[in-house]
Image 1 (cartoon, rainbow, N blue to C red):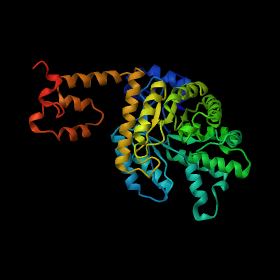
Image 2: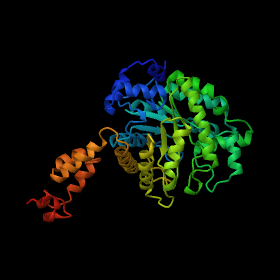
Image 3: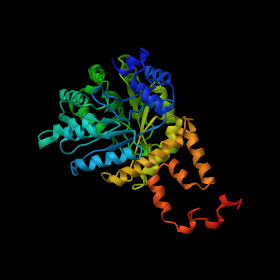
Image 4: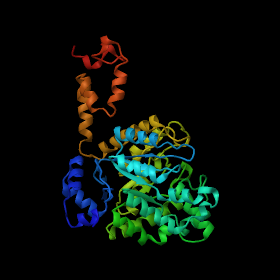
Amino acid sequence: MTLMDQARNNEVSKLIEEVAKYEQLSTDFIIKGIAEGSIVIPKNVNRIQKMPRAIGAGLKTKINANLGTSPDHINIKEELEKMNIAVKYGADAIMDLSTGGNLTEMRKEILAQCPVQVGTVPIYQVACETVRGGKKKISQMDSELMFDVIEEQAEQGVDFMTIHCGVNMETVSMLDRQPRLMGVVSRGGSFLAKWIRANKKENPYYEQYDRLLKIAKKYDVTLSLGDGFRPGGTPDATDGPQIAELSILGELALRARKEGVQVMIEGPGHIPLDQVQANVLLAKRMTHNSPLYFLGPLVTDIAPGYDHITSAIGGAMAASYGVDFICYVTPAEHLRLPDINDVKEGVIASKISAHAADIVKNVKGAREQDYMMSKYRKERNWEKQREYCIDPIKFDEERAKIAPNLKDTCSMCGEFCSMRDEE
């Protein structure tokens, strides 16, 4: 019996109690959301999480941090350090996007050591195994291998999986009729689009969706229906292929719910500021209020090296309109594999955007945190300010730079501090 089945039977488990306590909400609220499909708790039956989190309507906006090896840089120890840094600074989930080295071993280590939920994109492993040795091309991926890899990862304990079910013959045809500037930027989406064009066959994940649901139900894996046609540049935002794929994902979400399988919907991508609200409202409407998982979005394309900022701007807007789960973007986005400091910067930027949105959404505790910070700034209580700030380590580093005689104020105003006006 899946978590959704249990919720429909009104069963209150220890997991539900733990999540409700973290959210400062009732177990009834969590159960109702899971039963309806507006809330998910990614949690594989084969895995124990130390920090389970719920994602969805009425809850704190959650953050995901991507990590993983590449063919050009394979260092499991380094990726595990990134994982620890991400969790330390507030990531609620980790996705292993490894494409280099022993993928099964990398995933095994992350699952064993990560205290939060873990997600993957199984088609990456399928592609890597297909082209290994240089004898086959992406277009020659075996459809049975596609499902074998999902079963393998589910059995290992993966909590949620990105599956690009909406990249099918219909949407690929639409993309061909409505060319984009950037084309298909999703790796998983591009793999499947190439496969469909080369084989002139339907996407196995779409055609055999019931088979996918059966595996997901067996292990209670949450399906994260991937946006294979997400815009990779603002000129391509909110176009026909993106919306057509979204419509398909909405239908598939209903089929998943019917089988008791938890599902969330992934979203763009690169979106100009004036289209963010429309994208969120449209996605919520077309996917029947499923939890939304957005990459950013990035609101401009001209800031390589600073895309954690462009993403944080878009993420704050998107989450304030209803996005439930934000995938972080690091300063290395579009340039290289992120290092440990990039991971920290990306998580912090996303946490700021999530909190800003939670204030707008009246999420319990968000406004109170800001109130307490303001209160202690007025009182010049630096210890308490440290307690309520998003990065206490950064707070300490900056405070250590001021002269000893200014410990009561900051070094911007010193004796002219406006908070000392009563003195």
